[in-house]
Image (tube, rainbow, N blue to C red; front, side):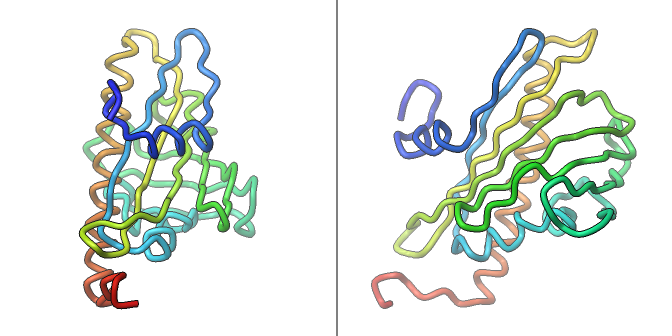
Length: 185
């Protein structure tokens, strides 16, 4: 582990897949989650740009305009309790080979301006079973009246909730799948 708490493998994935060009008055961060479910199962949830509510607890509804492709837009309805009701998001990258999804927020009634995120999904072994390392990074403008720390803390809290929910849903599905230990394969 380094001083940021990332392992050398996590640092390598972040360096390779999570490049954000930080400018003045922006904040950026990366979060990691280890999930006890195989990568194909976790990716099947993450890649659904058209159905983020499958694992994101703050989303009540999502409508995609047109076909699901790079540049597609989705209109997301946010559950009450957050300082927003809608968000318009564009699909920037969907790579089924490398398991990378990137989105950019392009509109909505919230304060997340120039928000962009990248989520990557990587196979690993956890307790002798197939598992998944999920890394989500973001960059966003710091709203007027807020500090970089406040902005990062808020966004990180949302992402942590989403990643915990992704783990809960994936692990529940994995138990139903009865994934065999890898030494028996």
